[in-house]
Length: 182
Image (tube, rainbow, N blue to C red; front, side):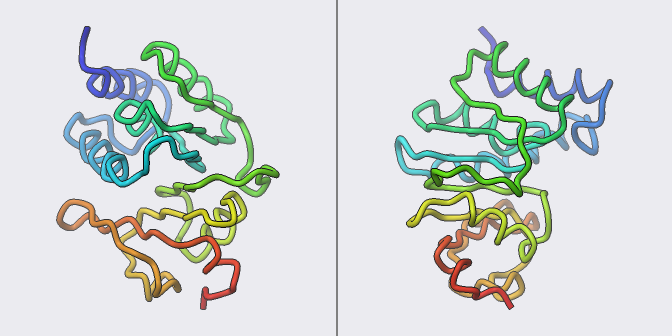
């Protein structure tokens, strides 16, 4: 059986040629998206309840689901065609992942341990929306090139991405609800 991450890239290329999933379907460009997504995989604690908001083509959620099957992972996407793609990939790769067609403005009653947002909105706009999805002790992880101070969350921890690609800001949801965004 082929490597599931390579199979995911195959699906991204194939579907991406027919519908706008990612900017470029060039394999090297897709690998950068994959690497950026996987940067979070090792840092998430075992068995964590995680949601990927506005996942689009499944980034970062699908690579994390492949690398970390122990996680309770939900991918949230509003666009129906992308939801079809995500369900297809989950089926083809036999991934135990929940895929929901929902708006990020409509958080569930029960919060998540970790809320991931990559390329959804600028940090100051996505943070309040994402924090609403987090549990009391949850964290919001934002992929960005902004520093914590620029994003309005100076207390955020930083998980670096590859050189020149920015970082993942790890923001306690409680900091966002305290109104620390400037």
